[in-house]
Image (cartoon, rainbow, N blue to C red; front, top):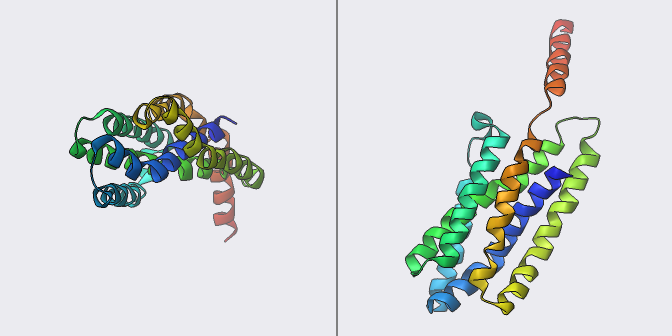
Length: 189
């Protein structure tokens, strides 16, 4: 369940960014639609770059906590930055951080082959609630104040996900069992 909440938090960050970056840049910084489109394009470029990180080098928990911090920093910079340049920089950080959360959360559900299908389906279901519900939530909150201030909800979700990111760590029992299976299989060959 906690891994699903990590996926949910990152899905809200990713979904809200996909639907709100262009609009926010245009409305908050009074730029043309072309500049708003460029902000969205930079957001997608950062997503691609963020997903190319080497996960096995740093481990899930470290990657998720770093991603949450980068996302929160990017959102805050995007939402509160006084210039279009800072909004672009915030957008890049936001997307680079948000890029890894959902897929890394899902991969942690597949650690134990016997329970993988059930766990991945639960994590995916919870996570997709963020993709579907995040943008309307930000829109609703934005109508109450401003979209920039509404986006700060993402920073709270990132703090929560950083705290519970440890739930994505591989179980020591599974690693030992997996290593024994591999050694037995190698010996049989």
